[in-house]
Length: 205
Image: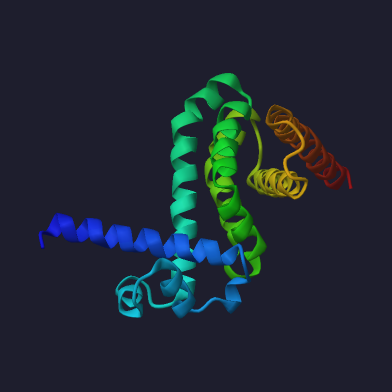
């Protein structure tokens, strides 16, 4: 077998194992899923599983890494639009489209967050991309203010999406994008104003 053929076979095996895990996670908690469960669902033997992953936790981490990498690609693709527009909309809308397209996977990961801290990984993604943008949009922001603001925005956006899923996406998608944009602008004004006021009070004291 050629090296390219072997690589294709390896990628296909990993893809099937990930799909199998995600299917199972929609049926039961991750902690109740065994390697045997995954291999039976993917219709392959345990030896093939262990060629790629030491355990189900490593497989789950690989699933999350793939999804976060896709999200990062979308952010990179639309970052210039965000910088030009000054609104979250150009970045948030394609990300939201991606999340909706993969809703079952995201819901499974959110439901098993205690195992993998997927929410924290999403927050890290937002923080990595948000620092330079917030500094560009809101001049004079201190490192402490920046951390507070991005933390507030990140978990707020994640909570917005989770609640939208819980409500079976009854709110039109465009309305959710508008709410997300308002959340970012409102958070920036509120958090920075509150922190600035506290700083002034300490100086006066």
